[in-house]
Length: 283
Image 1: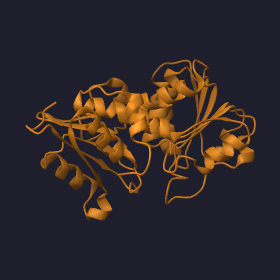
Image 2 (image 1 turned 180 degrees about the horizontal axis):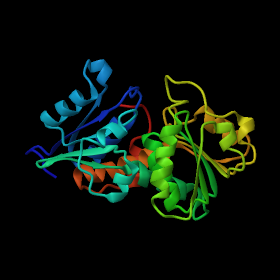
Image 3 (image 1 turned 180 degrees about the vertical axis):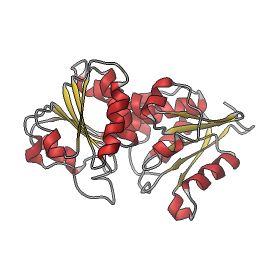
Image 4 (image 1 turned 90 degrees about the vertical axis):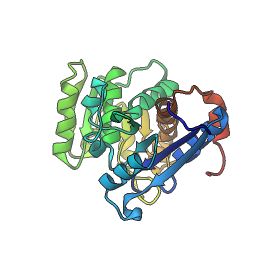
């Protein structure tokens, strides 16, 4: 990692609706725990009055070591970076970018973050049949994680059927035993599902709601919500009320965050100490 004489690392997050993101706190706190002077800025294109491309180029030109990228730009940024991992190329979405001398490099830590969150909650239990609602950037990463975890089937749900079909084709191309089906309606797709996943922005701060009612979740075993602001979403409240094992989006947030930290800095950090340190009010 290239740093200045003061061990400064300049990082940021590009996305919409990220005012309540905890990523700044995670990375700034990681800096304090490891003796690095970390700045981490929220970069909201519409608030700055620039396009995503302009914000991206501005970050690269102004000395940022790297950026995280969130909704709705994960697929857009994948076209602007070099991706060495064939799996991430297959996902077609990037959430972590490092600005190297020979150009920006793209990574996806949502994929690994989801797998770690799932295993922490359910151990070695297979996912079974999974209803995956939302096939955008994070949905793609989670879907690839489900295949790696040995899901029996994935029901890809999106109002945009072309988007769901595109993800289906990418998953089929992996050549796994996981059965892939496309749905335009979550109520139809959830029939017979063991796991239910929300990868839409529904439920996050500023965007109310849930993609399914509690009654529609009956019969499933577990549920995961990629939304983590707030942590206790309507989707997870409903899932817990009808008896599902719930996996919070905070676990994905933390997992992708520490993986991104390692990519940005190459510096190892005590995960347990970081968890404790980032509790409380956001900085």
